[in-house]
Amino acid sequence: MFDSLITFELLKIFLTLFILGMVVYGFISEKLPPDVTSLLAILGLLITGILTPQEAFAGFSHPATVSVAAVLVLSAGIERTGALTFIARRILAPLGRSEVLLTFVLMVVIGALSAFINNTAAVAIFIPVILEVCRRTGASPGRLLMPMSHAATFGGMSTLVGTSTNLVAHEFARKAGLSGFSMFELGKVGLPMMIAGSVYILLIGRWFLPKNHNDDATALGQTDPYLSELVVTQDSQWVGQEIDDKKILRDFEVELIGVIRDGQVISFDSERPRYAVNDSLRVRGMLEKVLALASQKGLTLHRPRGRYSEDSFIGEDQGKNEKGGSKAQPNGVDDAAPAAVPANGSSGKLPPPKLPMAELVVLTTSGLIGRTLKGVRFAERFDAVVLALKRRGDVTDRPSTTPLHAGDVLVVEGTKESLQALADTRGFLVIGTPAHPEQRPGKMIITVVILVAVITLVSFGVLPIVTAAVAGSAALILTGSLKPREVYQAIDLSLVFLLAGTLALGEALEKAGITIYIAEVLTGLTDYTGPYTILVCFFVVSVIISEFMSNSGTVALLAPVAVSSAAQMGINPMALMAAITFGSSAAFAMPVGYQTNLMIYGPGGYRFKDFIRMGIALDLILAALALWLIPRFWPLIN
Image 1: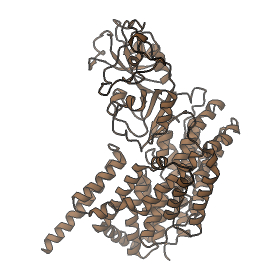
Image 2: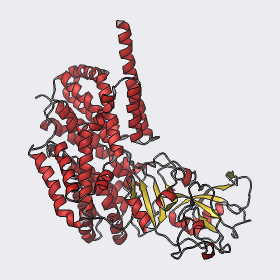
Image 3: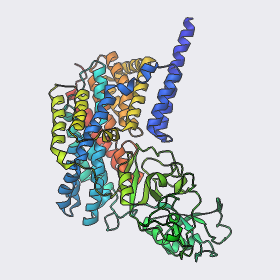
Image 4: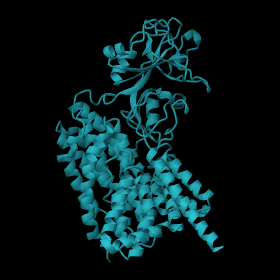
């Protein structure tokens, strides 16, 4: 029986490690959204009996999860007042053409704001303003957006409420019986890291970034090639012409990837077939060039059937209403088959109206990740159509059937109302939308007072952060600064599920005895190297993991191991907690670790290598500084 018990315990350890490995793989591969991966982890821990239902779902009510959600609500309250837009336009607009001055002021402002509000909200507000300043002054968006994103991270490292990473570490420490962090305690290390990181970026790092400083650099779609689809219409002059990809590349600077006819790919390498009506041309190029090609007589951009597709606009004798109204297609219409549109309008159909276009960045919080535009019926759902898609790396499938990834940039066409609705939808960042129609500048003072009250109460130890933040969120609702539905929209459910899943994994590691085993191994190392080496190990491991997955999830996974290791070695557990807190935030060499990096990826015209060139040296500088300062403010031996 004793042997059976040992076998069962070993099986639990193996299953826990297997689930952990699958979760890490899921986070890195991005085959599923991170929140779905976390939910599957909870399910796996339940089915295998490693955790009870109470233990598996405890992460949803964990103070860390509640604190993060409440701070997101407080940030939304500030955003709704229009204060961030006011600051962005009043400070950046008058600065003139000096790129260095713009970068410096931008980093100072965004760093200060991100110390107290959600950095994603701040970056989302500043991106359109920066692009507008770049268009006016000729400054390079590539030289401004990445420094802004990194400065937002620097600011978040300086206070307890600056980032969800700090809150998760604090609440886990409190639950483990430790003191946690005070409101500005992290600033002892965070502020020097912000200064060092900013100096490096201003003097050295910015030269590694792309300098797309000409007037067209910030125009829509001018930073990278897009994948799009064109349709050969009836009575087109292209019908009967020989398919020649080299001619299209020479004349229009657009790459012809493939021609689709009746669902089949037409080979034009060995043979020379000719264009036919309804042929779909899959092309890739700068958006300006693609639009120029689409303007040729007899070609049109493929628009999925919906409210604003070509065949939605019909002549008066076919049911046009007095407003020239559009007639939505009924549910069930397949957008895979492109609608043929007569070039001369002989069928009585009118061309679609000229609608505004905007770039739409797909964020990690979007429910569209892993799904296709066709599958979610994007055109009908949002009253807008996607004309082109851009992604880091090559993509050759048609935009409507390509599974979306975080960081994808879509060119969307729709009315101002449709684009505004997309801007208000969680998981999207729309560039160049009109100002939010529901901003409440009259609530600015009361909202700022509430935020300051929360910070003050936590700073003087009157209330714990979770209580103060929830009370502040309630005050925003009671004063009318936020409506209840806006509170629900502000809470990032994908982050909630991610935290709940990683906290459950941390509990499973602890319950299975894995954290104790790791702690014993590390304790053996201290006999040869000393406790400082363990501090370095936790910091470096935190940086590496956070380069590929959520920094908050990294803390939730490593915190149990850090506390157990400190107990085994008799060293200060808060020193190790500080190491994983700063290490999880100081990961700048990859664009996937931070949502703000994905937000700027498309508008800044970045390549993956740009983050590596800028980030590796930044990682090393901040690591050296943090590992020098942490033991001075959190001594390893109490």
